[in-house]
Image (cartoon, rainbow, N blue to C red; front, side, top):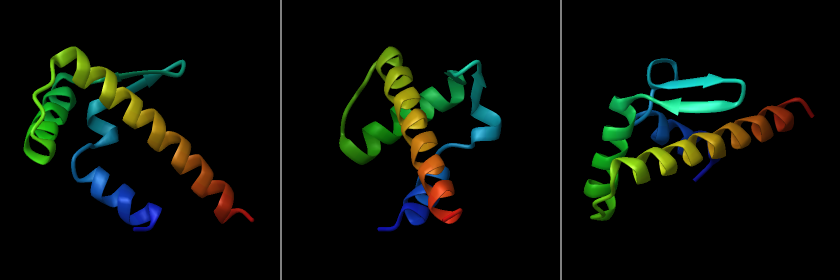
Length: 78
C-alpha cells in the first residue's frame, strides 16, 4: 500500500483540522479523537485501552504521520 493510500485510510478516522491541536510542537487530541481511537482499537484489534493509553498512542500516531508527510513532501520536491 502506498503512503498516500495509507494516509487516506488514516484520514477517514482522524480529521486534523477538527480534532488535533498543535502548539509549539505539542500535540493535543480532542476528547472526540481519543474516544474514536479507543473505538478503532476495539473494533479493529479487539483491544480495550484506557483513555490515557489512547491519548498517548493517538498522539504518537499523529507525530508519525507528520514525519511521513514531511518525507513525502521532500520526495515530491526532488
